[in-house]
Length: 366
Image (cartoon, rainbow, N blue to C red):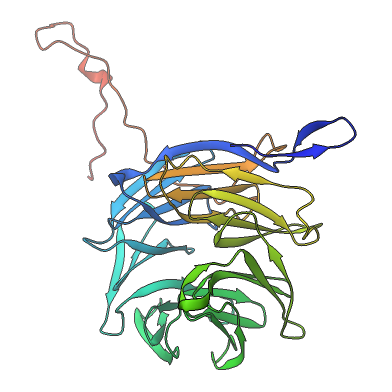
């Protein structure tokens, strides 16, 4: 599944893939991987599936770390990692667990009907913002374990992203509301695609979206163009045409270039360079999804790795092609593992010469 660029000089194809396959694992449960999240603190990647199960994997070789059920009958829509543990959002519940798998709390309320996404950001450090395909958005206090604010979405809030000046809330009709991070009042509204909005991301002063376009007869088709907005002037600038049908996207920020990782539902991934909008250098990957749909993706905090989840419970991790020692986090916190059980020498019950003192007594209080 590698694509290449034609080099007129040598008359040969040159591979231009910036990322190469690193590891692949089948998630628990045999159902679709509906949520993926690299841990912001430790060398872990978390997956949530359509059967409400969460599993974590340690390191780039994806060694299984913890695995637990967070919901019966509801798929995991979104996963966030925090200092103390992880947050898993399902259709009607928010579950908090410590990384070792012990539950902390489960929150459910009449305001949670069709939840979809969540966000934490610096201006409200103790809160998590939750949105969904419903007309209420919830600000939840993680310390008090209660809802602290309800906001009208005007229809829905399917995607939440943070930018220093704004909290971006994308609704399914194609509008993105940019809210003040302090009081969450709407400051600006961007009209993006003529059909449904699929995803958007913000980096620097650029906001990029993907979605559907309405054609004659009101039929919707995937819009091949990414809409690009300059947040300094709040206007759209030149859209970027993709070779894949964009379904999800993430910025891949670096010091030199601004690239966007674009994933299609068919499992094709294109790295789009915002400075090279003519696609002069093609960078395309075909995920090994076994013919299934690609459902989820995430970029590691180090930008060394990308992860993709599919409907056949496959998780594929790609790393920078030239990086021999990729990591998820540049300065990770140490991950806590279970203590190894001590083994003692074998002794026959009939052996009169057995040395019982070789097995230490447990420490007993006086």
